[in-house]
Amino acid sequence: MSSRCGSARGSVLLAAAVLLAGCDREQRRFSEAPPSASPSEIVRVSALQPGPAIIASSSSNRYDGNAYAISQGQRLYTWFNCAGCHANGGGGMGPPLMDTTWIYGSAPAQIYRSIVEGRPNGMPSWGGRIPNEQVWMLVAYVRSMAGLTPADARSSRPDHMMALPGSQILVEPQR
View (cartoon, helix red, strand yellow):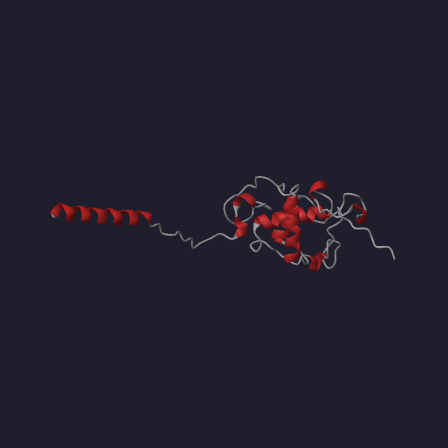
């Protein structure tokens, strides 16, 4: 009788040990960094910024030749109402994005800084509000509007609608 009771007690202890070993407590992180603070994607303006010294690994955009990322950038351009100031790239209250001469430069890192940090007299800072991946997609789309990305990655509008074949500049409608 005691051997039966001992084996039952042993099997109960074994079952309890298996159940307790299978329980993992979820990890909760109470201090998350904002999405735009990942050190691998930060473009430093100068050494006079707070925090640890972070050296940008690259100032090029890995999305420049990626058609999917450019189309996502176009979607984000609409979602974040960039067209409210820049129209559909032709300029409005904000400067046009379809030409190739820009005040703050057309390099990916310069466009990134314009979006994240803002610019005087109108361009708001979007840093901390838009995740870095999405900022780089916006950079790729903005560069595609000026024809600064590979032609095979840009929008598939018919060339007869473009002022220059392969560009994103639309022909003025004839009246």
